[in-house]
Length: 119
Image (cartoon, one colour):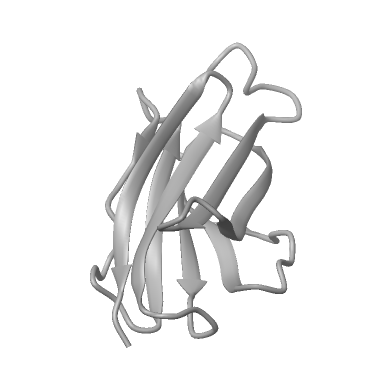
């Protein structure tokens, strides 16, 4: 597995993104974070399939966390990724308890899920 870097966001602490499988998935998938509820860190797993746009430099993938008012709380991934399955750790120790939403965007695909931070 290769370790990739993520863009730094001063409002959160992404621990990093790791490709956990280079096997090419058939579909986009955004899985429920684990654990949920969490304190203070959680894991988010997602899959990027092969698309006509995913070859060469890869497909632009963005994984963003929003608070319950829709404000951006963290950008965990914002880079080109090749097809595969990835896992991102998010340390939310700088954030208050509450409901957060995480959104995966890649090409025409977009999916959002809910997670709960309890301190």
